[in-house]
Image (cartoon, rainbow, N blue to C red; front, top):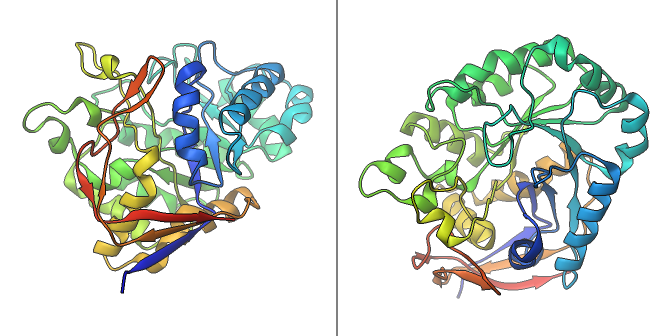
Length: 342
């Protein structure tokens, strides 16, 4: 008898869909299996207006029109968002994403100063209106210490705005895991790849460009802390793939782009990981229930049935001129998707 596991209304709470032909390629690779996703706004130019956000949402819906799927949109943080502007748009967005300037892909127009008083006008309005703040939490320090160095900034914002829901995006360190329990208004997402790899996997032998990401994978003790929290379905931790597609030629080159593409293998790999650690009973909380509660979501019904059967990961996914290499390209996972039902 085959072993079957069912995931109910999976949610990806940190996703990059890009735009144009890339969106048409990668959008359906999420919408096929996930009920919804929180979409990042770091396009070129970034999504900073209601018109740009609604237009982007329409393009996503068109790309994913074959599936029951809800794209939850975000705005790119600006210091000068007025209360009136945010009040008008709050029902159209799920949060606002703050990027320190230049810290990751397409973040050059991000925030130059993380001083609470500089950020206060927008954060105060967000707090009053109940709009969550999503943060890429890194400094410009030494690459392995950037997230750890950002912890005092998370604390200062959490203390200054106790009613503001703050999501530490794609956490990578044991320090961030420990901070989750210190403040009631702090939450976090964690990626598939940060649950699986360390810096050694990416650069310890031959360089593996398709595992290069920002924030960079850290030490074994960091990976273990993240994995332990996820396997226990820590109530303040959600799955956010940070699946970040780049064309193959921009990954396999000098000046390799940062990003790991995991959307089409996420549920298979997570099921394998949780089963290997005797924690399958917690997987639905990690990939759905926690996000529903934290963001007050009622996702469309979508049941993904997985069977214990080998799945060979494609070497590339292609559409027109776009070609993207997924994590584990050409390798075998021991769970495959059997059916997707409403």
